[in-house]
Length: 205
Ligand SMILES: C[S@@+](CC[C@H](N)C(=O)[O-])C[C@H]1O[C@@H](n2cnc3c(N)ncnc32)[C@H](O)[C@@H]1O
Image (cartoon, rainbow, N blue to C red):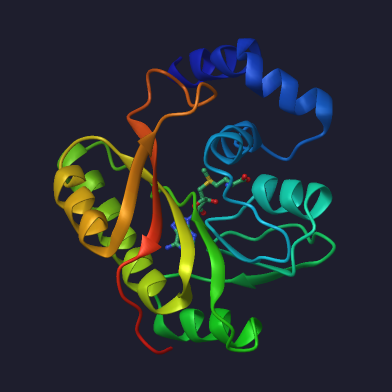
């Protein structure tokens, strides 16, 4: 029953229908477009890392619409290949996967790190938030090493337990931090996005 109502929500969802019509892999593309319109995150010749990339909406959109230098994508789920996108399969929290990501970019730092990672829901709100922010902290730690000094981090976050601490960490790491919920993000979802610009310090890879 619950699944049925989720399906009917999906099929009447304006962005879901639009994504289907335009042949996008996911409705998430509209969120990236809105974030980019407002914060100009995708720049010419950028090296980009797309975490939690499957089914590939963001990577495909960038590859087809922007002149960037490299796109590396990673997900624990498989992703159908996209021209000019290097896909690294595996759990981002594992050291060996992070090493592969760095190596795939010839040890260059990234100009933009995107994380649209969401963890599987258990039904327990505290556990879900805790698991999510564990990964979000890994993404932030990786970004401090992996971003160029003027690099940008865009990370999906969920309002609730753990959010304020994570926002404080972002404020400590970046000069400018913005919290932005695109119109295409479902209003009933606690999902929003944090954008960190001008890293306060960098570490060697
Ligand atoms: C909302 S989807 C991303 C949609 C994507 N941005 C797009 O445009 O198609 C979230 C993704 O996070 C991935 N994910 C969750 N935990 C992960 C982990 N530990 N490492 C890598 N990816 C993970 C999931 O497998 C899922 O594909």
